Amino acid sequence: MAILNAQDTISGKEGRAYAKINGNNEELFFAKTIEANVEKAKAEVKVMGKRMTGHKTIGMSGTGSMTIYYLSPLFRSLLGEYKDTGRDLFFDLVIENDDPASAAGKQTVLLMGVNFDTTVLAMLDADSEDPLQEEIEFTFEDFDILTAFNKF
Image (cartoon, rainbow, N blue to C red):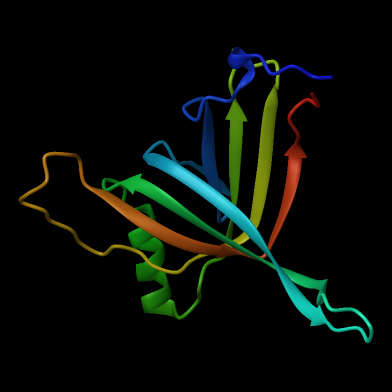
């Protein structure tokens, strides 16, 4: 039976993320939170003689979100490139959890074909006492777990 030691939980502050855009790695030092999810698409399967409906997985869809500090022109420039050329940019996003205090080790996930749904073009907030932040929703087309946490 495995026992969870508190020091082995993963600190969300320990890690990094970077985007692979046009062959360059762009460190996302201005990111506050990043989350990527995969949702399974399922079809209902009704069977004679069974009262419960079964479910068959028929595909998956990748979505995610980021909260970033409003200070980098990176995503606005990509939006401007699409506006000017009509070529939408898909890129890869690498997210690493690497808490040196945890025996769980490191996890590295590669999201492929990332494409933003929304990008803040301009922002002001006279009531805010906190740094400006923007929420970015995105989709991705594939993923790979490059390095998995150690098994407990």
